[in-house]
Image (cartoon, rainbow, N blue to C red; front, side):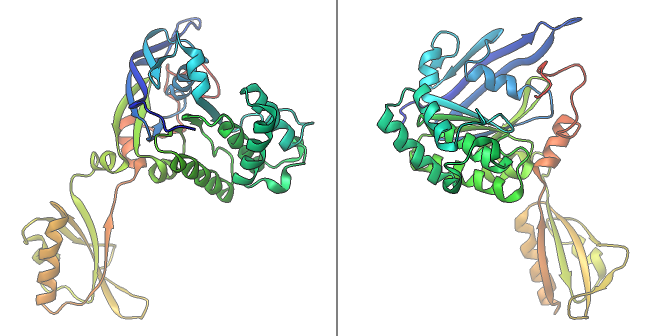
Length: 347
């Protein structure tokens, strides 16, 4: 496949979707503005009912927007659906893998025909992808006999069949064990890295997965985007200061001596007691420091070293995406927004 030439893989402006559900309509998307660059692995995080699946359905031409515009690789989702369908694919976690009486190889070949591949090219792609996603031993087994992890690898292979430019992944590791989820993530990375410009839009309920994979993340709630940025940028929203934990053999002057140093906002001994035993049985003091920035740590270390203190450990405390999410949304991923959502039970 030729390298994609579009600058923006996905663009939306003032995108709205309203479900006409009685007794009152449900607003699933409420003015979404989004710009995903070609080559990005872009993540959507949001609680149940936030509008993530509705957004993906509009972008994959399965659902019409109520208002606003959406473009995929420059093509309009309303008037140029045929162009979009030729250059994208979608894989959803927990989806049905197809016809249980077919074998893995037969199922994939059938989809290759749906995607317009010739017979010889279809079989070549099927066998290539079976090897790629690691289900070669199951190639002649019926789909009905596959495990959940094997079925999702099959779904992923099907998503790669038409060699898309843009891949939409809606909870692709949902319900998988740790090993199978890790393999699916690895296949995503490998597919994206093979051709510059390949783009992935990922929704996930797993914060660690989003943190590990995504170049940028949008946090979505009640049909609106609350924040967009890299994982590091989003984390800085909830922690402006630098937090460190030091372990020392002694602390002359107590934590107050450290708190008086330039750039140190506070210093307290950690835990209920000032001292604890380290792994060698020696007394150790843990100190929690709040610094204006990382650079202030140098003055602390220099002060301790000059006082003859032995520094046994330094660890920096980082906020998590979970912290960011809870601060912005006010609830966890599993909690549905009252009075909002997609109007779909599985969102």
